[in-house]
Length: 153
Image (cartoon, rainbow, N blue to C red; front, side):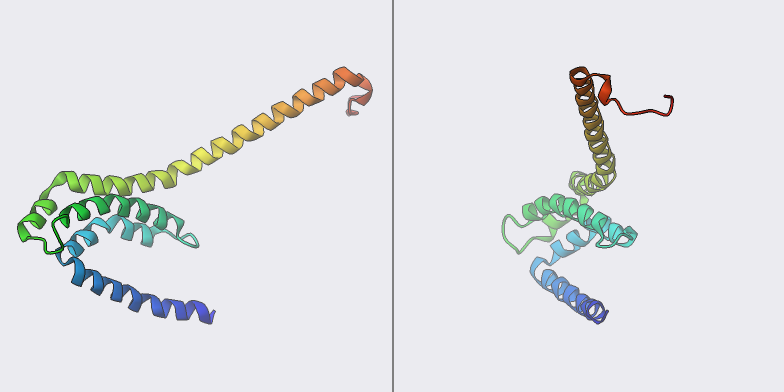
């Protein structure tokens, strides 16, 4: 238990160090990334599962969608002008793209449950069909002598 408490003590300073580094390097882009990552923050606080798999899925999709606009903002160098930043912050298409990435992460979280259930059910139905075929073949080959005894007899 001491390792977990020590790990949580190091997490906050590490995150603050990363935030300060990003703030120094990205400047205005840091504000863009904070606003773009809001769905990931929500997923972090909502996810109660051990290991936070929902958070990681939403964060990965959200970050993948946010990287393109931030890279486009910095395509002419790290020193971004305020006008370019204001244009990006006011562009609804950029925000739609970023938040659709987060929505895709949430969609994966909810859709994968049904897809996995369908795949497992289909596999088991195939196995039952295959076993029934083998049973019918054995009955045809060996006759009713190998038929299991039932309670009706």
